[in-house]
Length: 464
Image 1: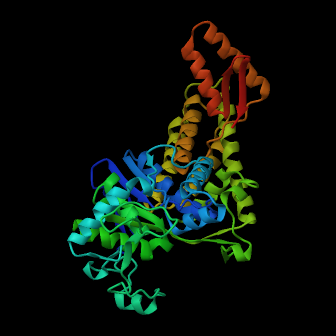
Image 2 (image 1 turned 30 degrees about the vertical axis):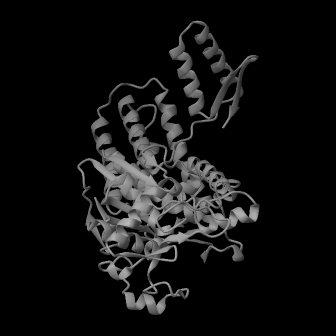
Image 3 (image 1 turned 30 degrees about the horizontal axis):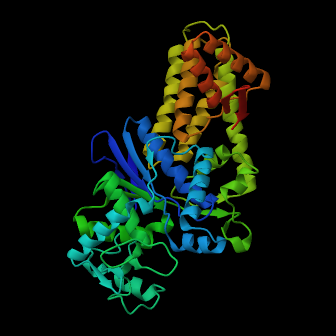
């Protein structure tokens, strides 16, 4: 498998640090508002990479952080006259709802909050200070970029260009205009924590370095995020992490391209700024996920209703093929056929085409094309005269590839009479003390979007 490494600006063969294990860190949301469609792209892309590593047999350790202390949260709390924690808790819950709708992070993912790692951040900053790479001025602590080797190596900028081209707030405390804050002095009415430099709170860049180190190690396999994070955020992460450890922070840096709306940059002033909550009122989030996989992740992608409608039609084609195969499999098919070997080779060819696309820098666009080729074959070649073996083989292959993409997850909605029938069967199973069967029915209903509540006056149910 080859991945494009933003650090070297070329595709490189991926080899994990530890055999059979992949460590990944993806910059997550600052939880002061609902996530928007642009935020969703890196979440879906790198969740798909996680899924593909699992498909290939890796144990994946995946971290996606929550920034729950930041100027944006503080300002939001002041606007609404609530605490910063209340702001963070509200939008973390909203994020989880959106994540579930997008079918991301159902397992193998850790979501650390920055405020849970304050003591480790203080320790990290103290160690930088001892090395002479950080300095304190009146309760603030800054990282000295002069102490970092090859600062600018990720964004391919040199320091002189950065200083002359940057819009830097005048700060006489800094030794170099490009030095960045590690610890901010307490301001009245803001959350703060104790530190050797007095009460304060961490800067933005320090949190990802600390949480990645604490949860994944000093050197990780992959660090990912949107291309807008390359500078200064990821550049500063590299500087502080590698200055402290003397080791590479991440072997691979992956960045996705930006998203436009109707071929324009997304902006509230242009009226083309959409949160996932707003999009969900018109489209199923599975359609949005499928859309975000329709282009190569490093290329820009344009969001529009026309494209979303086309994507929905394409997803419907896949669901129809799934239902068609399920219909055929319910028939009384012969076990085997003389044509099975040739059909199996064709199905394997589509699977190999999918894998080759995904191995080529996570080319989901071509991977989706391979899945449609498999569906085209299944629709034209598999019918009630086919063998049960080949119908099952085509179905299993299609669902395995769809699972990598995180699609085809919905089951047909149960009718009310079907729900009541299953509840009756569960009640009888419990009376018969067949608790295993009762639990199986409850789990089956939950998988199909039905939650049961055992009450004194009987079993109640609702759709989720």
